[in-house]
Image (cartoon, rainbow, N blue to C red; front, side):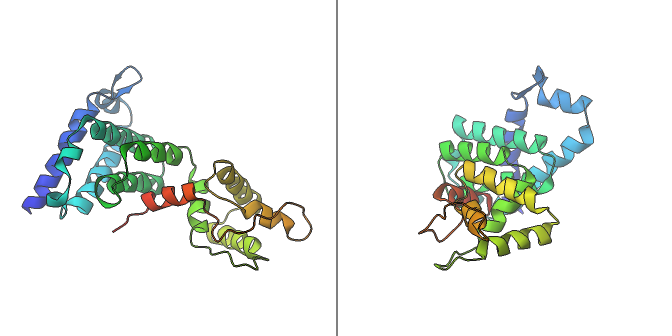
Length: 219
């Protein structure tokens, strides 16, 4: 019980310090929240704090206190907290919180990497994220014929997405170098043209795996 209190105190202290200094439309975020949709933002704030507390309450003694007390970490925390407040979907808010948790406790990535990964995640829609996560477990065999089409059908069926929506999302992900080879494999099927990317075993790039591994909790 004492550990939970310590962890919550630690997180709440950072939140209180951050909330008062984050500008939003010319005023402190706490003031704006008081005027606009207070219940919605307070719910997201509580969701964020409770998730972090639940995950770290039994790890508080093992955390790097020096790392968490530096100004750079305060910036990372505030940026994640602000992004959570401004994110509409609960699924995406969860992944943003996971990124912070991995930065604090699990993967121990650098602050620079954490900041960049937050930027990448924040600029993806929930459809992009669903397609991205769906591609992660797919292993590409040497004979990859039909793998892209089968994967596309499964993503569409599971999420009730149209094929063109999924293809557009995956093309965006390839453009951002998070995904590789999918569109070319799909286009070569049935004589649609395209050049197949050979020698890959995963649709996620190295950069893609780095993002994936830090938005999924590494317990």
